[in-house]
Image (cartoon, rainbow, N blue to C red; front, side, top):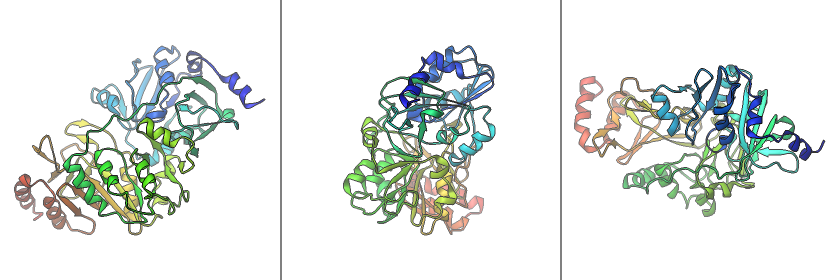
Length: 427
């Protein structure tokens, strides 16, 4: 049977496709752009649900409304709508390292059903997950049921994110523009200062992991005159396009795929998705490869850049909880932070503004707030960067760390922080 004949045979309506989801099974959806909107919405009308679970991650859409006894939603990393629902007790949050998700889901998922957006099928019968590989592509081999939502707006990318027509249980077609990352406010003076400081820690020939947001954008704005940079990251940010155009990125030192930028997902604007479409300079990999510490530690000169919510005198970083509100999750921060610690000449950078709420709250604190998670361990921390400078914590004692962190805290809090440090016996 030809590939097109198989396609036609498996092409169903959305309502027909979800009938393949049986009670007591677990549904696994990709994060961000590859989340299948039509299939997930149809779950609200699927009467065959009972004791099912839906694993989501960084969802970009409003959550569906289903009786939790029929379908329990479990987030792997909170998006905006998931954040609100979790803090209202409506959904669950599963602690994890991003790198470990394929293994973890294989252990806990019951008769897994994979649902994902894909690009249109090629002449060889392959669909591409486009902007994604993440944890989902690893589950394709484990899944008993695979439902794909074909979207002509999904870019075709190359790498280990391909699904063959022979593996697919059912196909639906749903063509709509991909979700786009909300535009961030222009870079503030604080962002630009942090960007300059972080750029000073990067040198030609380094391999970079960097995310999205105003601070990463400010960092990348400072890298256009660099040369022979390699990008190996979990997420492809839009600013990468400018680094390619400037000649800063060659990916010559990429041991995962020489000459290619490697990543596990992308989230940005249509400009980014168009850049990715059939771009041979990009190679998508599952997250248990991109974030695998054992593989990453073999990269010399690995520079990882991540964000923090608060840092205490020990060097512990909370990047997940703001006050009493769970905001995100661990993601890949601890994966890359540990990898940079193990890499020869590696540098692990945590960035944050020194204050919050118009300079009313210091983010350099004596101890993390009670109940705050530790995203980066004190033994793995390296550089902390605020708009007031760089604190190198690796190799420093608690007294030395405390002193270095107070020096990059906002000036209005330094006296109080010094007093508290002395009371704790740290100074």
